[in-house]
Image 1 (cartoon, helix red, strand yellow):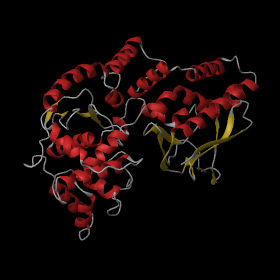
Image 2 (cartoon, rainbow, N blue to C red):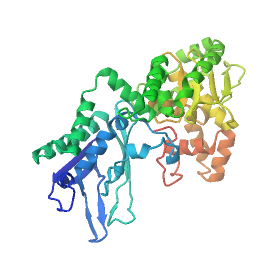
Image 3 (cartoon, rainbow, N blue to C red):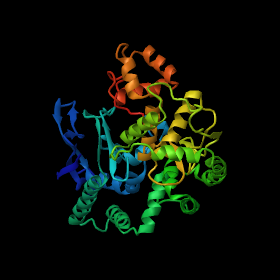
Image 4 (cartoon, rainbow, N blue to C red):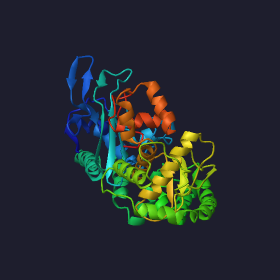
Amino acid sequence: MTIRFAFDWVDAASSLDMAMGQTMAQLSIQVNEETVTSVHDRRSNAHRDHIVVPLLSVAEWVVGNWCHIRHEVPDTTTDMTRQKPGFQQRHNLAFAGDGFLFPKLTMAPSSDSMQQLEWECWQPQHGRIKFVAEGKAQVACDQLQRELEGIVEAVLERLGSFGHGQDAVASHLQESWATIKALDPDEHEFCRAAALLGVDPFAVHQEVAEAIVAFWDRTELVIREEMLASLEEATLPDASPWLDKTRKILACQDAEGGNEWAAIRRGLSTVQTAKPWEQGYVLARSLRRNLDYGDGWFDFAAPKQPALHHQETDMPSGRMEGLVAAGAPACVIPSGKGDTGKRFLLARALGDYMGRPEAGLGVLTSMNTVRQAQSRAFAAELLAPAESLRTRLADRGAEENVIHDLGQEFDVSTWVIKHQISNHGLAEPLSPRGAAHAHGH
């Protein structure tokens, strides 16, 4: 998977701001074999694979959002109102603007090593061009970082060659970039924590900075990043008191059934894969075999298996969906969930415990991280196994009434059934967004 920002400097109209004009370029962005900057010019009825824009705008946007692009993970929902305030402005290249039109290319991390890229067709209301490409892909974080660094460095060199080194715009860009490049390990760690929260680490109020540091220092390593990703500035103050209270609840539940679940966990098949959802599928299938479930309904209260203790409580954030004990899949989950929603969260808690990479608490959120993707995939496969669905769909097709019946049979939402069908290719796509995955992949 590759991404490339290719550009050639061009002469600009004299009416432009001097620094803007001297960084005008033909910009072409390619992801694998796709050209993100493919446009149709409605005035000339011509197609081209580049746009003409000031790279100064791109460089300023990149530098201003550097930490967020590298560290701030998105919510899995396609509803943009669920994302943190300002998420699109921090991750979508279209907001580099300054009156120029850029593709709606969103860049956000999907793991420590990979970035999720997504771009879409769009036609600006009063623009003469229409962006005609759409797609999604994952690329290595370090490759995207090199490409973005290349843009910033090229713009600074270009401005310097025209004698703009001391101009306010050039000086601010240079100083901001130098600050980023000179971060020491502690400063980098703070920037990561602030970006996970959705806060600009270079423009944060002192009390918020202190709250971030306090939460980071007192929270277990295995959950602090996942929790911060689900919080925001307004909900951070509630997180530590909630965590203190919830730890006590889980400590009481941890010993109940923990040894039995630990023995089951040791007997499960494992697989090493770069795709967390595949790991979740394998673990779920292995657990069903271990507990002798066949292809039917999963019963959390079956008499021959350990109990899965849980308690309902309020969450410090709408993106927080549970906390899982260290020594057992005992958990706390949000109050007010319906039966199917509760079953899915209990299955996620079980999946988090069975698949966690190291000892310690587990956290369930709606964020798009490796750990959350694995637990969502585990839950879907545990409750509604793909091969069971395949058998049932073979003679009936994936009509809405069939999906409804399958949801009732397995006691899950139709949302889970639809995404299992889509993710495992069990039938034709169920919607125009057939690739929109419930498991975060």
